[in-house]
Image (cartoon, rainbow, N blue to C red; front, side, top):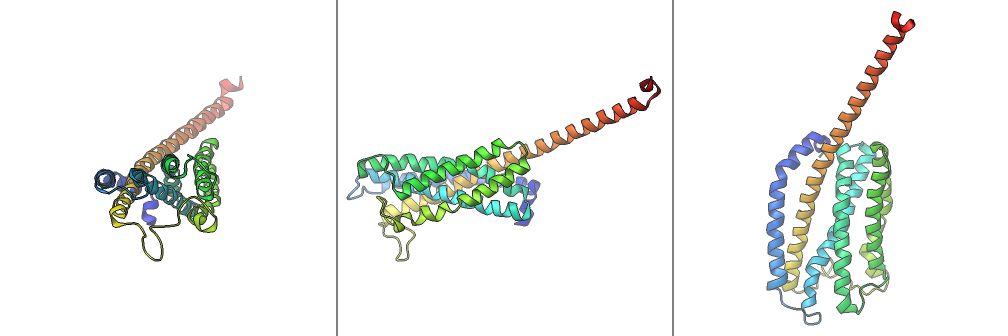
Length: 259
């Protein structure tokens, strides 16, 4: 894994993997949507509206997974100063924010027929909304600080502070009374969902994970190229300053300059 801390090695590996990851994501998404929208039966209570779950629930999973990945990358950055870790976290933020926004929107659409309202300020909804704001704050912090090294350090600290929200999201339905149902997939007694609905849900979850990976690989490659460009421009500017300083020094000590 430490070999991937080298930007060039990571870039080359990502470039080789990308076409395959995008292809797998497309296949899994197509199959998952087919199972969820066509093959799976309507729910005996929710009817056809249960199909929103196949988009909403995996989006919520990836929203948390993406932030968890950013937190791990931030720890790696702060301890080992790996540039790729910073760039990976930076690339993950917009993708995670997108999945979080999708989870919020589809959850509201699902909540209207189920709860009679698009939004309630319960613990699960509020904590996911906070997660969305954490993503936005992380991206804003990167943009607000011109020195990219300082921006990376500040963003990593913010990411780790915000990670405390992840267990709140996960266990909010157990700690407080909310409109959300308790965990029905990842539970000690096994999933409580019928296989006809559980199967497309899991396929969509895997499809979203692969899609997330494809998007982050692509964005990280772009971040590496921009990082190289910034270093090259900084080196050129420094070289130009040295040349200007040298010329000024020679001019000041030349006979013509003395006159």
